[in-house]
Length: 117
Image 1 (cartoon, helix red, strand yellow):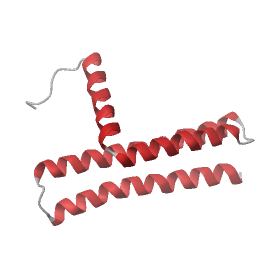
Image 2: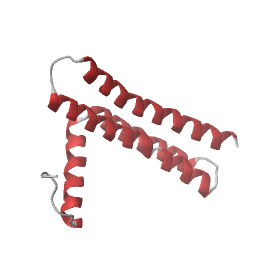
Image 3: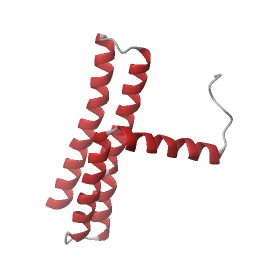
C-alpha cells in the first residue's frame, strides 16, 4: 500500500491524537456523547453498586463514542468519493448511523441488566 508509512508508535500516537482533535473540533454529536459519557459516569459512581458493576456500566459508555468515531470515518470516506447524492453512499452512511444506534441499545441493555441484578 503506497499511503502507509512504516509503524512507529510515536507517529501512530500522533495520528490518533490528530484524529481525536479533528473529531472533537468537527463533530457535534461526538461532543454530545462525551458530555453524556461524563454525566453518566459520574451518575454510575454515585449509585449504590459494587466496583465491578460500576466499572461495567462506565466501560459500556465507550461504545457510543467508538460507534461515532467509526460512523464519522465512514461519512468522510463517502464524502471523499462523492458529494452528490448516491443511493450506495446513503446506504453506507445509514449503516454507519446504525452502528451508533446499536451501541446505544447495547449500553441500555447493560445498564438495565446491572441495575436490575
